[in-house]
Length: 207
Image (cartoon, rainbow, N blue to C red; front, side, top):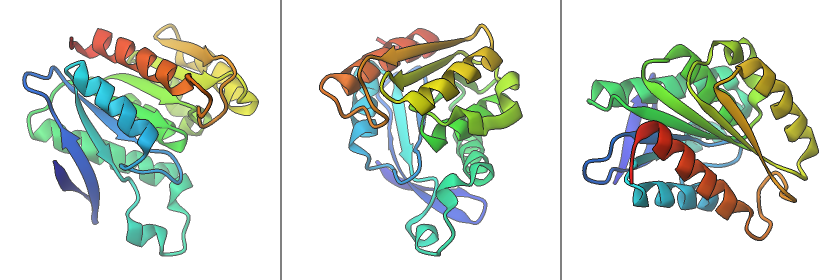
């Protein structure tokens, strides 16, 4: 179902699909240059729905804002506020079990949201995440976290290893051998999808 989610003065386009009796909804916080139509995230979302979980794929930056000249894709404060706004609106509509799947800069926004809403956000998955941009919020995250990084993505792998120590015992790092930042290599996204489904169904429920 296509809809717009009002957050502050913005109206964010989104795709919401919730299977019958879904135990929770996964909010996708897209990274820089990506959005609700990302084929990689769409494939992950489809697999989550097949496992019984709901999904919300949402553009955190509107087309008009992207055309405005300011590069808001790296404005972590703004992205975090919008993820929080989306989470709060879902909770107000009765969805009390939520998780986030964040990619690139969206992962930092997802982790900040998890730190701010520990009772709502039950788990976070980061794919190739710039988790360092979450800053001091890393130490405040209490939800289980799965960090997925390509083995050939050396700078981001280093960042995630450093973040793992700050996140504590509730975090796990899984390295996808030979994969780069976009996980375009043969089989890389299948491994990302399988790990994500296993992690989120364990923490939220599902088939």
